[in-house]
View 1 (cartoon, one colour):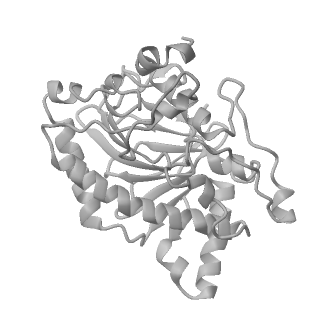
View 2 (cartoon, rainbow, N blue to C red; view 1 turned 90 degrees about the vertical axis):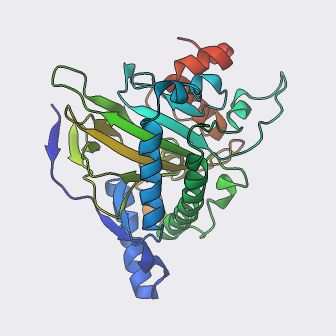
Length: 339
């Protein structure tokens, strides 16, 4: 039986990371504890332009309000790079459809040349699809992506500090061509008799996720098995959670936290925009040497037999995308598509 507890998630003041040493040390301790105990926290005073975040929300609403034909013109099913639009009910989590409309954007890059010997994950790099009917989407999202990347990288270095690792310990995994990813997500309202799975319970596969929410609740975090807390919207703050890469890198000392979204009530909708800080596809995640007192608490990463964690970054990402997007899997990855 799942029960909701109104436990407040920790709050991290990003500005204090560049403050005096005692202030910084205090924040690093809070960050380390939040990451270890919950894996979720609010990030405030992060410096991302509030007007720019508002503009991203506004242009996202404009995109979802476009005629269906304009959205279908940039359908993810056209893209071997898993970029583009999905209608509500197309993405799958835990074998059930997620009732959310979404638009996926990655780092804007040329597709890599693919030969018969290339690993399949190389096909994940490539250009985005952008809707011709809404040119502003590309410029606004690209500007926001740059600001979010700067904050997320600084936060990743703060995690290294909090773990007593060299400050730039994770930089090589991030690399020059990281698999960054943005999702614009609209959860339509659902009636009581319908499935309320906005998105099913899952972990994220990257380093960190930073989420910009509107004022609608729905995001829930699993703090212990079958005990969920609401990550209620907090104006001006991002909700941050840890992904599988940090769980792997710390041998399970940090845990990627399971979370889900419950659909809003009928006649309302929820908009959220997720920024995922990823790693370079061709890297392999090592186990970092934590200080002995932390290493003693690291019990190894939790690996679900149905969804094993892979240290090869490209394969770990591709595995998740193939499970979530069977239509793209069938069309572009037939040799890996087993369903």
